[in-house]
Each structure stands twice: as structure tokens, then as C-alpha cells.
Length: 184
Image (tube, rainbow, N blue to C red; front, side, top):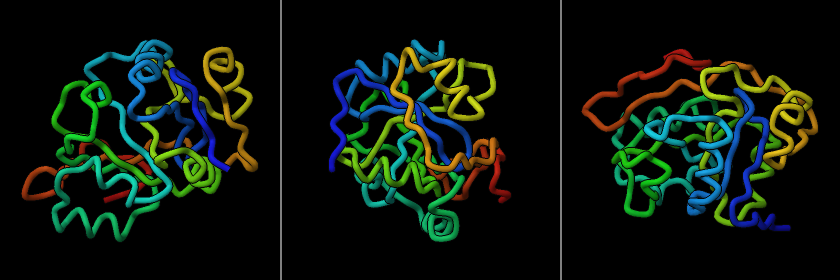
């Protein structure tokens, strides 16, 4: 059964790393809502997450060989890779930058959620107010954000509480921008 997200609808969900906020990538109203809910600086882009790599590839212009090696080793998992974006990626997700981050979380609940969403891709960020820690569990997510977003209850609450490792993949070599739960 496909989940139909309403225009402007934002979801709260657990991933393998931290709780996240997400919406359909082509829904500018929902993206605006994410920035508003978090009090997020508009110069900070969102990333795209999916249950499968194939759904994300149309948003990316080019994948260098070293990035393919990282994908083969760490996807699905706690790794966000940043590539030059394709024309399909909306500027309102990337804060006008020419790059986009992608990730395939290794979390069964998130995988099942994304499999039910049309296009299998969500524009995402962590579920927290800017400069604060992400929600730790379902109860905290509902308490702090339940009046603003649809919080998806996980079957088993399993996350590391440590953000993903972020690697820039636009140059000749990978550049680690944030060391997270995957050590590279």
C-alpha cells in the first residue's frame, strides 16, 4: 500500500542514527515547514534519503569511482555522501548549492516507510530544534514535535544516537566533512 503524503506534510521517523524529519523532495511547502519547525538556517541544505540507492541516483549528476567503493562498503548505513546535483534536485532542498547529500539508512522501519512513499525518497534532516540534540525516542519526538508533524511509531526503537559520517565526493578524492558513527 502506497502512503500518500498531503501537500505540506512532514513526517518524524527513526533511522539507524538519529530521529529524522522528512517530506517529499518536490514539496516546497513541506520543506519550508521543516525549516520553520527546526528554526534551521536556510543556508543549511537538507539531504535526500531512500530505502534504495537507485531511487536517489536521478538526483545526482556524477558518482566518482571512490564513491562507488564507499557505497558498496557502507550502504545501507550511517554514511551521507555529497555529490554534484542533477537538474531534478530542487534548489529549495539544497539551499541553492550545486550539491546534494544522499543516504540509505540501515533501519528496517525507515526502509519500510520509504518503500511505501511514492518515489521512495524523502528530503530530510534531524528531528530537533537547530543547535539542540535530536529526539532520543518516540515519546520525546511526539512530545516535542507531535503537534507539528506526523510521527511514525517504530516497531523497535533502535538507533545509535550518533549522526552519520558525511563525505564530500565532488573532487578527485573524498573529503570527510563530519566524522559520525562510521569511522573512515
